[in-house]
Amino acid sequence: MDYMTSLFLLVGALMLMLSILLSPLSNRIGMPVLLLFLGVGMLAGEDGPGHIQFDDFETAFLVGNLALAIILLDGGMRTRGETFRVGLRPALVLATLGVLITALVTGMAAVFIFDLSWLDGLLIGTIVSSTDAAAVFALLQGRGLNLNARVGATLEIESGSNDPMAIFLTLVLLQLITLEGDASLWAAPLMLLQQIGIGVVCGWLGGKLLVSLVNRVDLVTALYPLLVTASGLVVFSGTNALGGSGFLAIYLAGVLLGNARVRMMPAILQVHDGLAWLAQLCLFLILGLLVDPSQLLLIAPAGLLLAAVLILVARPLATFSTLWPFKFNVREQSFIAWVGLRGAVPIVLALFPVMAGVEQAPLFFNIAFIVVLVSLVIQGTSLAPVARWLKLEVPGHEQAHRRIPIDVPAVGEHELLLFRLQGSRWQRPSPLGELRMPADTGIAAVFRNGRYLRPQAKTALQDGDLLAVMARPDMIDALGHQFNAPQGPKHLGEMAFFGEFVLNGEAQLADVEQAYGIRVEQEDSSQTLSACIARHQHGHPVVGDSLMLGPVTLVVKAVDGDVVTKVGLKLH
Image (cartoon, rainbow, N blue to C red):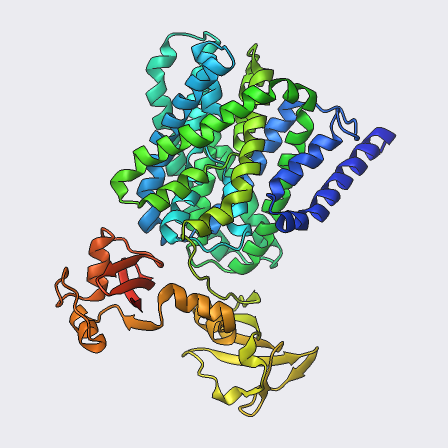
């Protein structure tokens, strides 16, 4: 290995290490970690202290596509199938018509701000029109937020499915700009249908085959995540080779895999969490190396103005005009409009004009970079405060400290779940025999300060103990709530949100009126609480939905599909 190769590997490894070590800083200062990765790349670049000259756009384009594919695969596996119940239709409209509206409004603004031709301006609008899955997944999953399911599902599905529309518009405008023929206009609708159609078919078939493959082969545990990654990239590249949207295909394959019964799934998700972070880190470092900060400063005022138009005008217009038929309330629409996060996708799309040899390509790349920086700084840092201000956060569920799959057919779906006892409930020792465990579960071991305690009825449990429990994955929420039941201020916060009384969704309004001595004039007393809430939420209630009925407010605490099973009640 020669000196230059060794030096290149050393610098690359140091950049990765520095970015990882700086990542905890993002939570302390409220800055998106993706912005730190970009910053490290810029500092290591030609204008920074690192003085690294990197202008290999083809390598950056390849790395960008592979990184986005891995990020989308991971995001798809973490998207719950039930979220499609409330988020699929609005997300698809926002991912198609919403992207088009955003591109048109932003493009028209770019024409006047940068004094460009209409085609060049619309190309800029198209490049920055789609939200970025990497940014959305990272910020929604990394901020400790538990959003209203209707809002969270719409944002996740939209970010994973809006790339085909943005890529389609970018390719059409590039063909028009480079004068490759008048037939491009007539071929445009066919290109869009081809991208989406082939992407959906390949993603669905690839996901089904991947589920079957993982469940049939007998491998070492460490190889299952690698098999999923390699198979996902096969779906991605194969779909692209057929002329479809590889991004859409790999996201859909991930969704099918994540919602099927798949062996070693906890291990797969754990490894893929690291792979997704590595992909984001490498992607943003390389994109940071590509940019020339001195060139950014020259167009910074105009770039900031365009970013303001995108964030304050184009995205809200696209959101409110496309979501109103789906009965989102104003708070939900406002938050979705604000979380139009831009990340790696616009910068990767900005590489298309560079590789096509468009004259204004460097300008397009710099504009996209400024828009992404502004979006990450302004929208990314304010995501959690805005969600809480708009009251879209709902109390979260306690999760297992660790999930260990047991790949033995006789065990069925059971896993070994580790729970750490914490909270004021466990400050005083409590006998294990007093625990009311759900059916089909059992405590396998108790660990305290590295010592093993045989689980017996008289074993005293206390704060800090680690419990090993045999249970099915669908019992995690119930077990987590039992072992880490919120106490003190957190419990009061949950009571303040849902109310002090919890009722069955099948209870009738008449029962509530009789029990609490109230009268609800505007509703039929014979209907159930579930039916009443579902009617007001147009058939798709989610946890956190509230309905004020005279002297009481009903708050949805649990749902099963479209059926409300538990309702919190607040008395005014």
